Image 1 (spheres, rainbow, N blue to C red):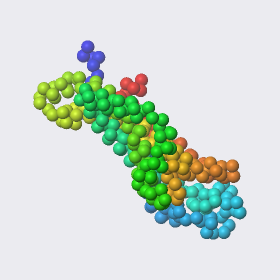
Image 2 (cartoon, rainbow, N blue to C red):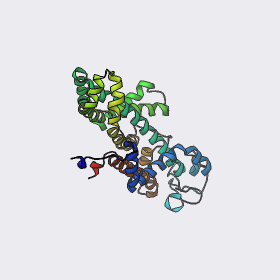
Image 3 (cartoon, rainbow, N blue to C red):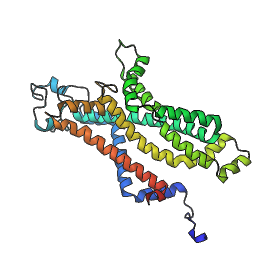
Image 4 (tube, one colour):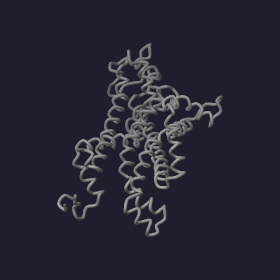
Length: 320
């Protein structure tokens, strides 16, 4: 019987073992490098713009002759790609595509990270409270989750974005970009936390019956100490794994809202707004769609693979 038990190498913590398993996963390491690259590009967007010598707002094609034809499309082949404009020019407005893409990554990742952080925090609080306290708290939170999960998310996002924006700004006034960003974060957060909260509630229900939790209760530990010292460390696996799946979903949702015209609008660079422009001009300039489309596909795939690798590193039995 003793030989069948799993043994932990001496001197290695669970975190060290997880990191060791993750480093052995080449797919996970490669995906992490891609994800880090995207975040670095977003954080360093002003530096990249300064070194490159272009910005995402100047309409180079309209200010200089010989860049756009009479229909507003780049004169040079492949969307106007050359040694000066590395990714070409945006049709009609003539803005630089590279800086549009870099700042679009920055906008999308900022929104997705903010929504993910708010969603995870809300799910942690409500899920653990419902699972640990039980009773009326569990019933009330559970019914609230059931009610919110019955909402059709896409229709809710499209319908309520203008309403949320109107709460901050008079409809006759121009809406500042930061108001749209705040509204977008609020709308995505409102219907984004329930799935993780339900997972954490179930995990907490199982953990609260374990011997180490009962021992903490007998020793006189407060509920807050039990949650902080006993429950949360054992809930980090589902929290981290779900967060790595949620963030790319929020990226695509925010981009979809901008594509539909209820998210980020001109002149703020954004992935979804670039897709909207690409959908209008793809028949005459397919190159423009290639860069935001390729970047988003690469980011989403890398982040999903990273989530799989993180899950396998925390729980190697899941990979079998």
